[in-house]
Image (cartoon, rainbow, N blue to C red; front, side, top):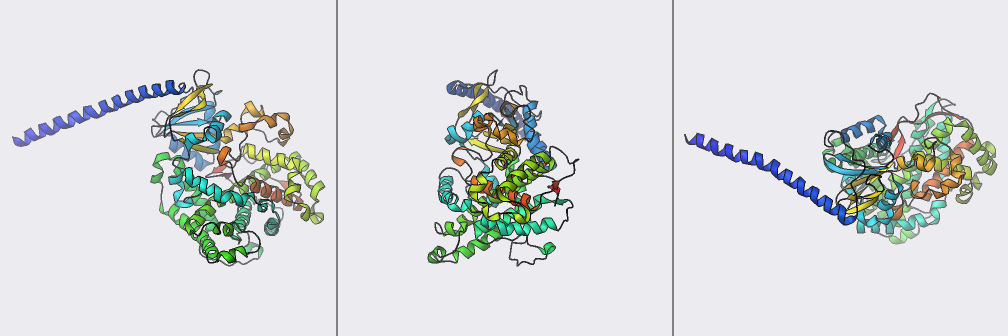
Length: 523
């Protein structure tokens, strides 16, 4: 009898909770909606014009995006989503991931607000936690004072004459030439060589000693190995791929932390620690006596903390290696597809610097490369269609607004509540017909000689903008210009299979490159 009474009491208690919890949720939602209306009125905002839904309260979308990423279609999917919304003419929409509301925009005015005019309203949000296992506390992961300290530490290194120094690239180019020649004019993957080239040049600039990934047995060169060196490049790629997927999972990033990811991070850290220990073994006096310029040694004059040195170097290595390799890959992909552009570029470079055995390599300098107008146009057009970081995001640190995206016409401000993430698709902005015309998806370097391109403003942001604009912008452009010039001098013939898929699939982790590699013929 007493057992029956206890069962009745428990049943009654549970029934109250079953009723109370949904009721409390309903009450919370009502008050939250009222508070949102209050904030809109207070900040002069209107409801967003384009709310996007996946039909599953945001539980389907992140898995769709991860699948698109695996297929090499995530950047184009982000671009296409602007056409799927209620009003495709409005370049901003809201969506949900695991019920959490976010915004996506390609509107230059909103991008300007995120990166410059309302810089203090936004932060990197979860990026530090998402990227911490690989990149630690560096300039790309930190906010506020940590970011300011990092930028102050690193800025002088990029402001010096070293960014214009191209002579260090030539020995690496000679090794690259050997790899191209060994293919005897047959199809090979040039992108894979670009990644090895840029990691070699970046490690020499950053660490004072190249990892020499281009030197291998296939061209008859044996190299010495140390812990982490042999597997560094592959581990770095895999780890970055995991970081991108962790970012797509938003607040649930911590679910993606497999042993493979941890092992790759360990390999990368072991590699960096080798150089850091070498630098810290030198006294301040010995650092001052080092010949030439080494990024790490200059940083070691400012801090002796090995973790600070490791993290900052890996943060810069992501930019110094991946962005330049990706840019070069897309440049030669489009040159191979557009023989008339290639011929015009060859004419400019041969006139200025010669070709083949008559190449005047000593005349290729930072200043002379800046005077190659068509080369600059080719690089700009490649950065427009294939920005190194196609999509980025910011996180609201207070209740604020974005200038556009609300009201019936989409021209009114929208409310961005505290802790809301806003993604911005530079890839989509750069392909907008409003700014680039009906041929916005066409590779046409000549557009950079037209008056309209001087009025683009925030519609062209391949290196970000505002206070966090890329410190290494000039370094990357100089290296890409030099490598492009030397390859074209050495190998006048360039072609690829005309049936190659277009637009190409893209591998997108922290930066973007060709998903299937750059399979071309050069001779």
